[in-house]
Image (tube, rainbow, N blue to C red; front, side):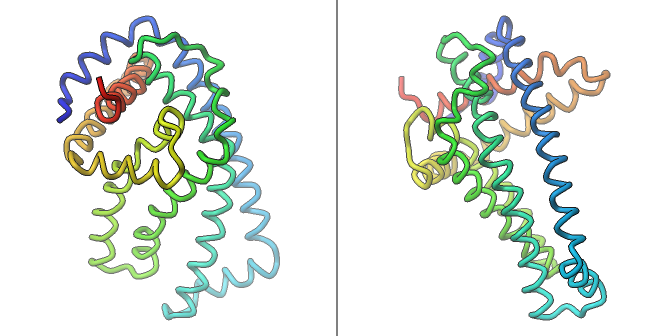
Length: 244
């Protein structure tokens, strides 16, 4: 059983001396993320303003909600989602994995360097496909709510989205450190975390609150809270999956 306070206290002690590399790597990642987001927006704007597709989208605005409407809207949502998942999953997930692994390395008392940001592109296909599968799991309850806007679909969404996000949150280090396959990594993460899901959820809520509060005074506190968050993630991974 994990203890949130213990993880946070231990991680804070390890933050000193590791901030610069993690912050530098995160800054590079953010620049790449916004570049990819801009590229994605441009691609989607081009696609959706293509005459035939634009005509279909305009007709949807005045169409009654029926099976044909739902199928057409779902098709467009899936297409847009898959394009984004491919761009972000294959190009950015290995980079983000580098930052997460910095947190794991710190907790294993191993040195970290900024070039770790690019070390894990050798796992590009595993990480990319795992990200797409993870995102597909998220898409199902969200799509149900957007197409059939009812109380029951909203309840399904607010239950399953947090469950999926928290339960599958460790698939990246499991693929890299434990050399697991895509499905095995996702399911191992889910099965282990589900046993103490509320504890892990509480841990992430604590990290989220710390980051938000630290960002309030002109974001200066992020200099400490961001490295602390990644190191805490690495600490949580060790507590859950690494046997002493």
